[in-house]
Amino acid sequence: MAKRVVIDPIPRIEGHLRIEVEVENGKVKDAWSSGTLFRGFEIILQGRDPRDAWFITQRICGVCPVSHGHTSTMGLEDAFKVTPPDNARIIRNLIEGAQFVHSHILWFYHLNALDYVDVVSALQAKPKEKSLQEVQARVKKFVESGQLGPFANGYWGHPGYKLPPDLNLLAVAHYLEALEMQKEASAVVAQLGGKMPMHMSTPPGGTTFVPTVEVMDNVIWRLKRLQQWVDTVFLPDVLAIAPYYIQYAGIGKGVGNYLSWGVFDDPSFDPKKRLLPRGAIFDGKLAVSDVDGKMVTEYVDHSWFTAECGNKMPMEGRTEPKFTKMGDTKYTWLKAPRIKDHPMEVGALSRVLVAYVSGNAKVKSMVDGTLAALGQAGHPEVLLSVLGRIAARALETKLVIDGMLDWTGELLANLKAGKTQTYALNDVPEKGQGIGLWEAPRGALAHYNVIEGKKLKNYQCVVPTTWNASPRDHKGVRGPIEEALVGTPVADPDKPLEVLRVVHSFDPCIACAVHIIHPVTNEVKAFRVV
Image (tube, rainbow, N blue to C red; front, top):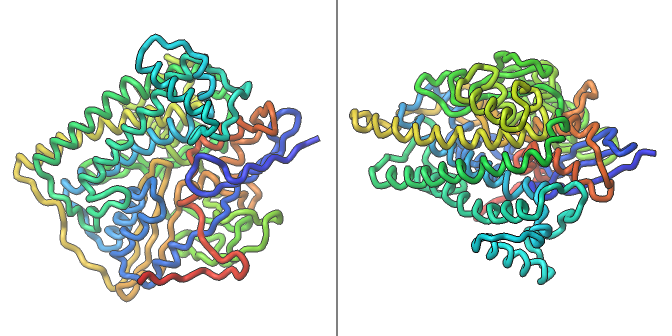
């Protein structure tokens, strides 16, 4: 007989995500993904000066505000008909890259690794190095105090944990080091963007940051420190842990459709020439198709929105909440975006797959080298899995940090050649519309704007977790996380560690995807800050 298991909220993610699965004969038979808060940024922006949008939308998420700011700015530049100077392109790449490196380190060590690393088991290790002995003493103090802090409420001792004690201890030591590395990456955003989170330097038309020798020297020093740590700690950790969980190369495939809007512009501003290019893969076939923002349609058949919000391209989209109850056909605040009626997985795996299939030489070399190290040479199809999502984020971190050092060289060369412009003058048009298509660390991000009378008439955001955690659509087709969970083995339904591993592999962020509303009246609350 099938057993219903509800995890609400899913731990170690941003925001509230509820996952319900039906387990039968030791495997997940069916799954439902629910975002349980309402977000109203689209409503807040209506009637405002369009230039407010890039600043306000950064507040959608504290983990990837940079991406929301850049995507909004790009959409406004599309409407304003202005192209930023080359120096602004490079500076935006550097700010975005620092956020990517920060976010991927955060995800791997602090949000995801504890599904594979048994912290309590580290007490059984017998380290010879003094530094590891000190870490073990700190963990022992945690355990003996009965207050595990960030390590509380784990499924410690679960038979699904496979690492030996010494490797568990090493991973815990690197968990602590990773906190320092996150700080370095955030410092780069703060130096170029004024502060982090919610940077202040990339309005429509370019950037207000003017590079100086002192700041660039400091940025390069931090980037080289991060690069060394990624090369000597992050990537080796992934290769050391992966063989113990190689069965996850066959678990969590999902819908088999992958979308990347592309991120990190080159001088041409052609999205197909970005460091991670634009494209889509359908039905698991290793071929890339062209895509654009006008191909997106959002459905609300299983979401708490009015029927008028559904079956629309976001440029004509509406945000009108209508909560009913949990348990009927509607079960989430997330809409169901589709391209040509296909649910699409987004994120690092999608970006790396699109780059790999597009023939990017560096990505191909990195992916093929990793497959060989895992004993899977010549089998890129194993990437379509939980293990593939983990490997893709690690490889992408290496790709981005190397790219950032290249961009600092480009910027310094421009300055030495006398190319110092960082901003192009522009103005809000009387009427217009634009689309910003970019990538947040968690996946494809799109902002749509419609301007009338120099004010925003409509604004819609289609964010990464709306794609990945979307509900069933008008045809009853599951979203990517729901589909990836089906077939997942579950050893103990009361401790569904395997379910967490599949969900966390998508790096869900419900802060982006959900909304806020009164629980009884359905009223969208208005606030005045004085």
